[in-house]
Length: 248
Image 1 (spheres, rainbow, N blue to C red):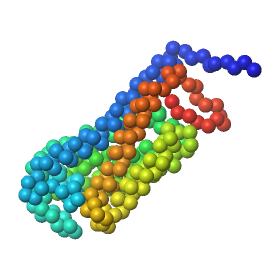
Image 2: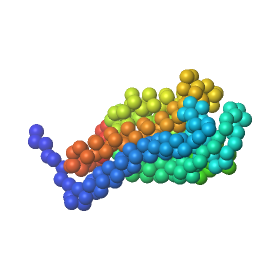
Image 3: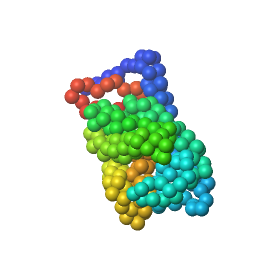
Image 4: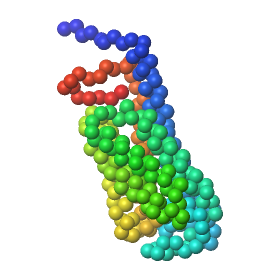
């Protein structure tokens, strides 16, 4: 039986090219977010003196505290971050890169309730980084706690949900890696709240909790960029009813 190839108009082709360009741009945003944030952690931490900043003892938030003094009644430590403005500023572009990337690449994540819910949770977690930057822990403690809740709870819940995206979707290709990061982020959050460092220190455990999402998103961005650039340039029609959904 002869099989006819579907015909596509110039408008279809232009629409596909525009969608591909948006996805590529969004993927680059996702790739850039985690390195931007990690670089800020390293640089601002180098400004600490007497005592030096410790990734095992100090929280990420300590880098953004605007005053010097003993901080945190549950785990008292002296905090003095000379370059706190730079750290708080870094939270904002990190959030903007994450949110922009997730929005621009939304078509590539496929359809389905699980994928949509995962994106919403990840968006909430990404917004938490921005809120943490505009509300330092020592000046706006309640808002900063809300920011941490968004990152730890919503962000890591989004990771777990992404790990259960149905087969055939983009996220399902990364299922094993996604579930590993989701488990790390969730376990790290629970252990950090319980003030258990397990050899990493409580500060180190906070990084497991808070960085699992952006690091995973960085990997997703690289994967998306590669598949978009190397993908078939022929636009595809939506799957017929009953077909297993794909993604463009």
